[in-house]
Length: 419
Image: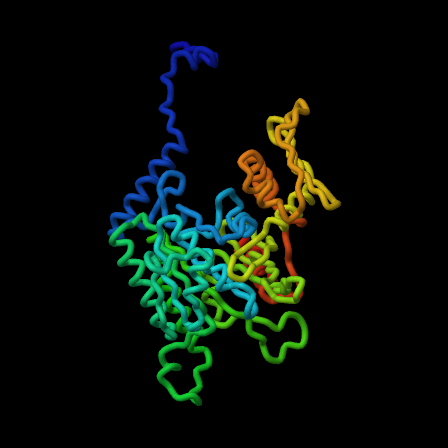
């Protein structure tokens, strides 16, 4: 019987003589499969529906931001410098009567025109004043289309046709459609029917259908669609917030940003003449930035939004801001005189401004020397990399705040149903 061969078990010898196994990266396989799946889906559907968000420009990417006219409001919406309202999204601005909704819409229209864009203003309230538009900087002679209709179905039909026709001429032109307002619109059956005809729930169904149809077009064509809405009081509510917005839940659901306007305290001169109102704005829903943030500003009739004093108070409350290179920007002053100064890490003073509070806009915000430092400080204060409880403003008595918070938690996968 032949002797058994000795089996070599030396691990070093085996490693040196055995052929190297073929290594296949799991991430490479996954990347190839992802790319193939995207191409396959687009080919099967017949048009572009699937994207790689890291390399492709999809409809969910925000290509441009359109200013609201308020620096604070732009920041709390977009959480970035030179931000504002996102293109390709639906925005709802709502609040009580005479709170400044149409005024802010006018500023949005002006910002769109300043970017070379086109504004379509759908006025279902029949309350727009051409002189007021011009006084606030809107050019009504060109790149501005005024639409007078009171029918909800026509609003969506006009909006869709406007988008397709305008984008057929130039795909890169900014387009803003303003619906003023949802509460003043009526479905066709209601307009053509008798006054005593029951149409409960009809408006909500029409808006729901219209939103389902137009949301995709707005995203694909990168159009800003702004819906102005009112606040109504619900009957029979004994506890909590009795207010709600008309038109059903479709607009709140499809909106990427919902802005609630409040306050409204009048601004009077020494002669008790009302020249403006104080406005508080809160983002109770925000898909492009942290929600539940607030901003305060003033609307001066015939002039527009003013917020230089509110910006001063915001920066003074923050105190000193230290940049990465050690530069310190400081806003202070509790007496009549206020101060804005910038110093290097070595203590060398670069900017030193002394002014009254009402002069903050002219002496700092518009000053060639101080303005860049002001913008840097404002960005440091307003842009939030992480949101804390101090940054969130939620009114537990507000139905809209609580509902928006519940929606946010539900989308995060948390169970918010009552026990």
